Length: 88
Image (cartoon, rainbow, N blue to C red):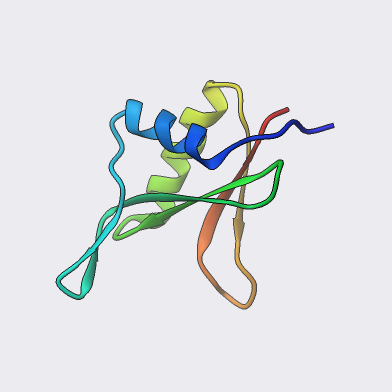
C-alpha cells in the first residue's frame, strides 16, 4: 500500500537539486516546475515553459533515483503532461 506523501516534500527536494519554481510575470510564465497535491498518496509535478517533455523526463529520473515511484501521465483531453509521484 502506498504511503502518504506531501507536495512540500517534493517541492523542497526539487529546490535542493537546483530546480526553480515557475513564476507568472509580465503576462507570461517563466520556465520552472510546480507541484500540486493529488491526494493523500500522490503529488503531481508540472513543468511550465519550453522543453516540458525533456524537463519532466529529467525530473522523473532524479525522483526515481531518490526512491520515489514516478509515472508520467497527461491530463484528460490532451491536457498538460505531469508526473504522478508516490512513495512505494
